[in-house]
Length: 286
Image 1 (cartoon, rainbow, N blue to C red):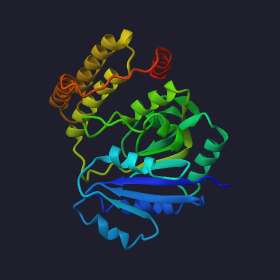
Image 2 (image 1 turned 45 degrees about the horizontal axis):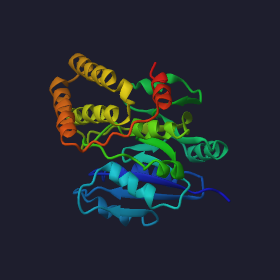
Image 3 (image 1 turned 45 degrees about the vertical axis):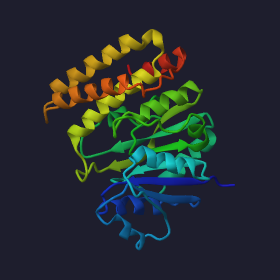
């Protein structure tokens, strides 16, 4: 029987661009698919789009929960075999890509995540890796596919103190610890428009720094914990001080402060992965 996929789109105040992501999913020729939009308490009239798209599943939160909560809700309440995640400002570049991803997943039961090739208005390191299908340790959240039962088995996405960033690597290292692999799959190409609607770059950087440090604290084996944490602090501060388009130093220091506040609160539960999984994860970072 043809396996089912759910295309999950999480959205917040992007009613003007969301239809393009929806149309992209509807136009995929793979037949056994469902499209679900989880709206995170938008105030821009997103709910009116239900009239134009009655064939998809709509979920409207009455309070702001964040996109990780939304993704977990979709993962935990679907009967689909695969979850294909699109951001509300992202879309497939042709109509046959979903089927290519599912065909690969069907033939590769050890693969838990497919990291699609992301194209965008600004250069990304990910784009420069070529078109080989290779094992990796991370993916970009705006376009990827997950094996639902594998992700459910490790507890889905972990909630972070910051609203943005770090969730992908945390999920990947837990899946790797359980013996699954993460594959870069450039046969599927996603355009990420990176719209400025409802986007604050400095706040995203602050949140990303905090969540990255939380990731290290949660998952690093104790023998490597403190050297790895100090290395992360140094790398984040160095990058932020050298970044030219906008000043990020203040945001970086605020993110570090958020991490230490959260750390002393006792709310970060450590559940380190094995040394083997940690070394394998680091081996992909060069």
